[in-house]
Amino acid sequence: MINNYQIKTFEQYQEAYKRSVEDPEGFWADIADTFTWRKKWDKTLEWNFEEPDVKWFKGGKLNITENCLDRHLKTRGNKLALIWEPNDPKERFVRFTYKEMYERVCQFANVLKKNGVKKGDRVCIYMPMIPELAFAVLACARIGAIHSVIFAGFSAVAMADRINDAGAKMVLTSDGLNRGSKQIPVKRVVDEALETCPSVEKVIVVERLGWAVNMVEGRDVWYHDEVQGVSKECPAEEMDAEDMLFILYTSGSTGKPKGVVHTCGGYMIYAQYTFSNVFQYEESDIYWCTADIGWITGHTYLLYGPLLSGATTLMFEGVPTYPDMGRFWQVCDKFGVSIFYTAPTAIRSLMSGDIDHVLSYSLDSLKVLGSVGEPINEEAWHWYHTHVGKERCPLVDTWWQTETGGIMISSLANVTPTKPAHAAFPLPGIQPILVNSDGTEITENEVEGHLCMKFPWPGIIRTTYGDHERCRLSYFSTYKGLYFTGDGAKRDENGYYRIIGRVDDVINVSGHRFGTAEIEEAINHNEHVVESAVVGYPHDLKGQGIYAFVICKEKPEREDYLRAEIIETVVEKIGKIAKPDKIQIVSGLPKTRSGKIMRRILRKVAEGDTSNLGDTSTLLDPDVVDEIKEGAL
Ligand code: WT7
Figure (spheres, rainbow, N blue to C red):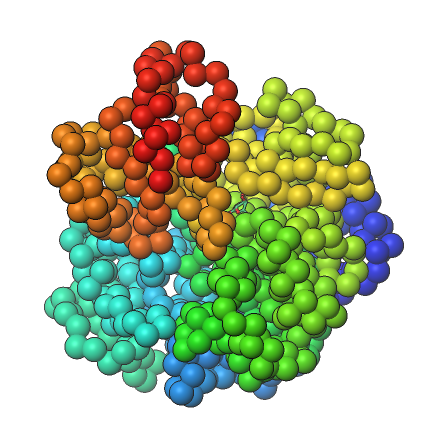
């Protein structure tokens, strides 16, 4: 029974929560017992947050794909596992039963093996949202290769950085991709990246557009050639609970992205438990998570969580606005979607369109709505709840991070109370605390502080790939004995949490994380630039926009040309998703005498609030502030 530990009432939530704090090991061991293990674990939990060193289910042996696929074959072999809806509504959708999905994954796994991939090898996946992406990820897991999915919107430079950091041996990609009315030459980006990636021996290309692409002799092969005559059975590699399952790169407050590492056992249990409970998943549901598999939401809640639960998961290749602003709702009606999980930025962009795009669909099948990626503002919350959920669907605002593996703070649909724009309560097993900047715990309610966790959960980050010290410094050193999320949060008089946003130098653009240092580094590559400082500012659609203050070598003749060039540089170094929204050319930056940029001042200017800039007397050159204020965009 997969949904054995599904909480059905608020009282059960309170009981489960209480037990999870009093006896966390017993709590998680009971849940873990409902999974398929080759060998049971010896010890449920070993941990310290100093190193950090966290081990869940030590000595346990398993393969996550046996839990995602094999164990469903008897009872759900003919049930739909995956529905794939293409970008173009005129193209036919494709469906795979659990049996078919099992066979596709096994075949893909055999193709990987045939091309030299072994347990422990890193495989980079740079692919559009096509079924082969799902098969590829699971195929890696099946043979114990570590997948590192890179969102296909990242540039060649960004991809190369990630491939080199992971030392990936293989890249899985496609000829091109569809995105709304555009087609993008994916393989060309891979070719460019691989000019600087000596570890990559093979590239497997899946055909999507039917384009003629450059194939490097001895390195590149077509998937459709390789899969000819390959067996539909592939034995699953036996993995230790703490063996790496995947690496997923995310931005932090320094320039270099971090490879967040998740392991097989704990991640599996956490993905399934949270999926089942937060969305109150039932066997007959049609579940749709709109995130790309290139982000953690796609890993945990498009792929692993639903498949571990035996659910039918929908994968969409396109964008919410193509061919028109009603596409999401058309797809919901087409397949009878009952659980729908998306990001506030998508809701805000659809809100700006004609309401008829929503009203012309019935949306009768919807039961539960979810939100993820950034704080959902009240206006978006109400629009989503009223027009999409028709005021009858609970809306769960799910707070979590790449590093947490799964949802941490959220209501459980119809089970625990919700409050607009609040993530609400911690899930069982999660022990959040708020601390002051000196690290003291704030115990009362109606407070605000830095959000930390004081006890490990099975989905917690284990390390940052190749650099454990970085993991310690980023998450476990700010506050002794605590995992620090980087977020600020409020707790209201009834204990509801409301996540306010990052308190570090990370900005959240349309639910995607960027370090300001990472964007600055990219901008500084432009030959005309001397120095830059990037801050986030409130943006109606994206949540936060990117505002760059840039010092140039000499005053440009045409500022607009220079801005376009700087944007080009960022697109080249990171990708279109990190394009600055505003670029202000300045002659200096507000710095302290020790040379530190006072971002607080820049943030105020970017927000358009220059009335009270606070104390600027400690600045090296206070005059620069007036110039910046006057030139604000
Ligand atoms: C950061 C994590 C979690 C998957 C998608 C993003 C922000 C995420 C919420 C929410 C307020 C949220 C936080 C967090 N965030 N969900 N429901 N309410 N803020 O994953 O790229 O790792 O980013 O996104 O600031 O730290 P990510």
